[in-house]
Amino acid sequence: MTAEALVHSVLDSLAVRSDFPALQQTVRGGKRLVYLDNAATSQKPRAVIDAVQKFYERDNGSVHRGVYELSERATAVYEGARKKIARFLNAKDAREIVLLRGTSEAINLVAYTYGRKNVRAGDEILITEMEHHSNIVPWQMLCEATGAVLKVAPITDAGEVDLQAFEKLLSAKTKIVSAVYVSNSLGTVNPIAQMSALAHAAGAVMIVDGAQAAPHFLVDVQAIGADFFAFSPHKMYGPSGIGALYGRYELLDAMPPFLGGGHMISNVTFAKTTYAKPPAKFEAGTPNMEGAAGLAAAIDYVQALGIDAIDAHEQLLLKYATDALAKVAGLRIIGTAARKVGVVSFVLDGVHPHDVGSILDRHGVCVRAGHHCTQPVMERFKVPATTRASFGVYNTMEDVDALVEGLAAVRKVFS
Ligand code: PLP
Image 1: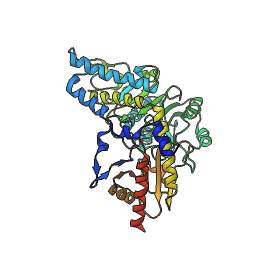
Image 2: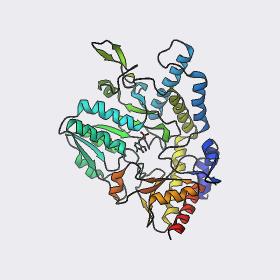
Image 3: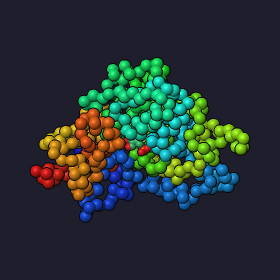
Image 4: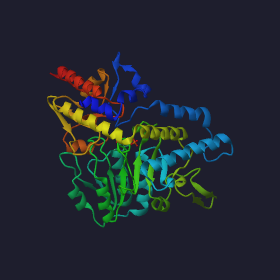
């Protein structure tokens, strides 16, 4: 079987592509749109767009509050999405799913509430060198507020966590370990269950930044030993502005609230307010109901394609792209871990990644150029930035070929 035939045997990406209205357009004067920026955000299938529209057309009403039919329907949509996420991530209970804006807000919530309650001066928080800024800055803010110390586990030249160094940095002082499951700039899939086990053996809680994991392979928060797990559905064909935090119920229950306001209370008087139980305790204000409708549709969409088929499809594209890019003169791939998702970051000798991105754009190829909100990774590999191609369900080998042809055009401009 040819590689092309093999790709089509696991996922019919051309049929899948037709599900996405945005991908039917041409750009830059008639060029076929080649969308390779899925690690930043994915395009949305018709089913997700329709679910959001249907919510507005039929079900919009005051969630959790009303006594009328529309309000009941809005509540059913919203709480139905929570149950769907719980099943998708294999949480024990839907009450362990807090709906909020996305991974950044989820990590900030844990740092602000769990962190301020449980971390003291001299305690340590361990992260890795490959974290997104969303999993660095909230911990620095917590350290500033409490006098705790941030420790960073180094990564190897391949872009893998140095597990021996990680283990050595753990001690009785470590209260929190927070690590990315999949690196957005390197593509590395971390041995997160092993890291959780080490964190727990040291007595720390384990927070997993799952922003880049859930779109690509089956996630089981219980199997990986996550105490908290953050999720951004806009990277998984769902709407932006909605996301989820999974937290073990006992931990959520013991945490103080994050934002104050409507819905997160049990009783309010001017003398004293008592709080609702989780997850309501962490969901002040009117939430993104239409986003919940779209998010539920996104989960249905990936499950209908089959998460294992998605994984297999992206692995084939990753291999095809890695082999093709290795043949481009002067190109160096940053991030060569043994286990990766479909993310290829690279630098091209003598050409700034922003120029690479701009010239590719003229050919209809959308990639990300920059530090990808992982400046310490750029520093580790001594590059100012990289160009990153990241794959999703609708990408094909033809897309990879367009990328490689675009790079030949970049070479011509800079020769
Ligand atoms: N963590 C990782 C690994 C990411 O790739 C991203 C987004 O690119 C985030 C966190 C932040 O996610 P969001 O912007 O959806 O809050």
